[in-house]
Image 1 (cartoon, rainbow over the protein chains, first blue to last red):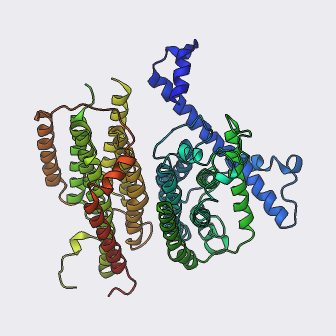
Image 2 (cartoon, helix red, strand yellow; image 1 turned 30 degrees about the horizontal axis):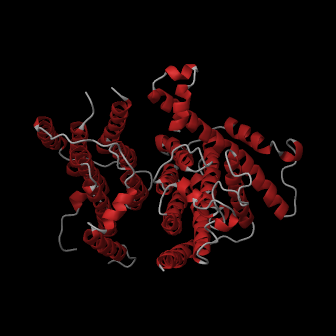
Image 3 (spheres, each protein chain N blue to C red; image 1 turned 135 degrees about the vertical axis):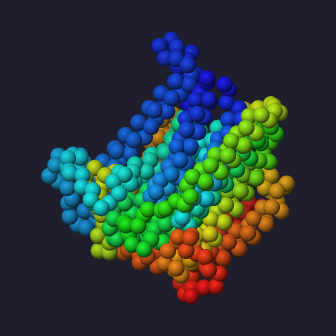
Length: 350
Length: 102
Length: 165
């Protein structure tokens, strides 16, 4: 981003007169607004896609009324939610009830900054990119706990604590899988990781050091599925178990923020998975549509494919019980993660 | 004036005293633990500030990593103890935890 | 007054405000939220001091680990939900005097000491260097801390078992 600011200063626009600090601040603010807009648009598209895809898998049609083929359905839902009355239980803590949606929105929004969108341009070219994303997504745990507590409702509290325990348990296999890739590149920088996979589909990390990277990709996929509270790990939101889980007492706009944040979290983990294992902004065919803005297209395309598999899995697998969930994380994924780490490390040495 | 070493040290000192206040005055065991965490963070700020402004190598940051890790271990064990006290006494009021033989 | 100073004053004000909320509020969850913002502020201070790896570690371990642990501890040690969230304070006046005295001594010492000046280099990424130091200079403390963490893990799991008398 510094180059962009430099080029603006060298130009003849009126922006050249401002001190660089103000320019940086303006770009940061623009970036934040862009991320929030992307999150809202993503929720718009993803909710519609989810409803249509689940409908087709269940041999029905899904939303068809509002707009052609129901395209404007999510927009109508958003308008409805905005106009709905915001009910907060009288005995609940008003300030915390209002604070939790902010936190849960902030966590994925902050993670968008470090992701590698194109070869040349990254919003924040951190050298600790992977580490930063892992630590920022752990903020959503606090938000869910506070949401569950602030509702003054034992189902919400139980749902919140279960969700927090689930997310915290699955952060470990996800981190181990990320470490497998970081070990091969030797850097935590997302752009460096994407650049190491440049040159065609045979360079992607998911095929190298077979089968360790493949298993690591599987571990990462399952662990991040659990971190987003998606089926088969959506016990904290299950209607048959806990009414609505931690967002039982939230209505109207605040509930929509929880949904927005869930879809944004799905987008973030899909983007991270695409960047780490599926090549980031590089195209599958070497040197074909590989420069400039095509990077965003390939990156978003891979993430879209991963999100499609998230939705596909939702209607394929049954829900896991909470002890099965914990067993999977601690007794299956974590040992396999360590084994992959060890395997790749030994392979790299030999 | 230009922000230098003293500014960071002053911040660390004030955070330390606020944490100390929490440890001394609070009755709930978990809040006392929160105060301890604040004290540890203040000391960590001191380490990092010294290594940046005086030594310019990474010794203070290494120390900082170890401090964070050990603080995490201590907090985990302390909370396990607090929950055990709660199971026994049904309250985490530190004033009531005054008998050695349970 | 360049941007570094402005950022420092902003982050320091945020951290001190959050720590004040943490200490002076009577609601335990507000204490925890104050601590959350204080941890974020301290992570920001680490970034200002050029310790980027340490800032991410602070966020991951303190916010994602210790604060979650503290919140679980708070929520599991209440006798009934909703009520009884007030925590009392004891002997506020003597404690405030003692802490103000300690603060005064520390601040006077900090202002009076002639700290030696060193060449401040531009901040550079520290991850690689920290990793190398872990494997060479600080190898033994690294191993000892690993064993310490194992002991803490086993101890906490043992203390938290279901059939405690």
